[in-house]
Every structure is written in C-alpha cells, then in structure tokens.
Length: 261
Ligand SMILES: NC(=O)c1ccc[n+]([C@@H]2O[C@H](COP(=O)([O-])OP(=O)(O)OC[C@H]3O[C@@H](n4cnc5c(N)ncnc54)[C@H](OP(=O)(O)O)[C@@H]3O)[C@@H](O)[C@H]2O)c1
Image 1 (cartoon, rainbow, N blue to C red):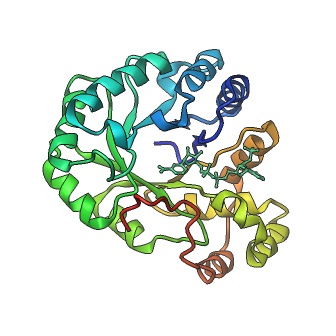
Image 2 (cartoon, protein in one colour):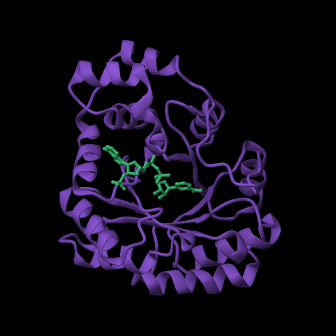
C-alpha cells in the first residue's frame, strides 16, 4: 500500500471531489481512501476515471458503514459501492467501526466471501482495538491486512504501532494532520521552520517514517494536495523525531458515541 494516500471525508462537492482526486493522481498519489458514509464514492470514481493513470495503478479503499454490517448487507452494500466507484473490485475494504450492526461472527464471513469472489483484494478494519483485532484475525480466513485509526503527533498510538509491526498489519493513520491541530503545536512549527516546510509535512513525514504505517491526509485544494505530497521528500533527523515523541497528548479529534474505547 503506498505510504501516502488521499483522504476524502467531507469532500462531498461533486466537482471539487472529482477534481481533487484527479489532481492528486496526476501529481503522483497512488492511494485513495473513501467510505460508504462519505457520500462521495461516485465522485471519487469520476476522479479516478478522469486522471491520466490506469485504474490498476491506484490503490483504492472504501469502508462498509456500521448500519450495513449484517452479513447480507455487507454483500449488497459492497456491490453498490463498486457500482458507484465504477470499478470491478477495490484494493481494500474496511469494516468502518466495530459498532452498529458489527458482529464479528456474522460480518467477517461476508468479507471472506467478497475476498473469495475477487471483489475485494484485501480485508481491513478501522477503529479496532487490540482485543477486536485478535478476534478478527482468529475468525477471518483471509489475511487481515490493515487497521485504520486516528494517528498523528498528538495521538501517537504506540500500542497499535507495536501490534501492527508484530502481526504484520498496515496501520493506516487517519486525521494525520489532527484535523488542523498540527498547525498549533510550537514544537512542530520549530521543526517545520528548521527544514523550510509546513507543519503538515512534518507530521506526515514522521508517520511515514514508521514501519508499517501509511498516512492518508485529506486535502481538497491543489495547494494542500501538493504540500502534502512533498512530505515524501522530507527526512526528519533523530532530534526532530525525539521532539515529536515528546508531545504525545493522547488527544483524539474523532470520538463518536459509538466508539469502542
Ligand atoms: N476510518 C475512520 O473512521 C476515519 C475517520 C476520520 C478520517 N478518516 C480518513 O482519513 C482522512 C484524513 O483525515 P481528516 O479528513 O479527518 O483530517 P486531516 O487529514 O488530519 O485534515 C484535513 C484538513 O486539513 C486541511 N489540510 C490538508 N492539507 C493541508 C496542508 N498541507 N496545509 C494546511 N491545511 C491542510 C484540509 O483542508 P482542505 O480540504 O481545504 O484542503 C482539511 O481541512 C479522511 O479524509 C478520511 O479519508 C477515516
């Protein structure tokens, strides 16, 4: 899975969404993240079709919403997602949250069926804690490929990083800019000024520098899409990393009532 992806939550204007996806792909992004709940799968699909990049080169992921996690609803809603995205298969399909209709023994066999049918190339979960990951790995026939969770310098997720490295899962860092909070942290501004880059790039480079970690910043403007892409060229030194590690506040930006923690 490419180390940097484009997030699309709240990118719901048809034209803006399709253009941002196409611009990102033309620039060099090869990883796009959407979800049934984002109400934009159709526009993401349009962006992929409009870009000068073959479908096979793009790592495309979507997620099944919590009201669609009963066995038959997983199958039917995934068919709808593929239809909206305009693709035969996605590269990764996630359980969006272990909540709502999620029942590991009912939900996960449906993911195995989709995997066996070739409609999804990989199985993922999102917002799973170690106990949910243990249960899912036990129940699934397909390998569990990824866990997508909130992660950034203010929420460093050490336990889930260790788990991912130990069990060879990809940890996909969502809200990697802490939904804008990274711009308000003095230590990150100091590192950004030292390298002549943005705080966004510092956060992304720190995340992408970790083994098994991928980052999916959301950006809808061309300038933000380009700024984030440049993080691939930023190398932080040990002093920068130590400074970032000293600022963990275990501060979440995404914390709905149905969260499992
Ligand atoms: N699995 C889950 O439950 C879950 C939950 C949350 C998010 N996600 C995924 O993760 C993605 C990213 O998370 P997020 O959208 O919550 O937040 P984020 O990526 O941390 O932050 C996005 C915000 O930062 C701005 N931004 C982006 N790049 C910037 C830059 N270089 N300089 C200044 N501002 C910049 C964006 O503005 P513009 O849009 O104006 O460019 C947007 O307002 C989502 O889009 C979604 O795909 C998944």
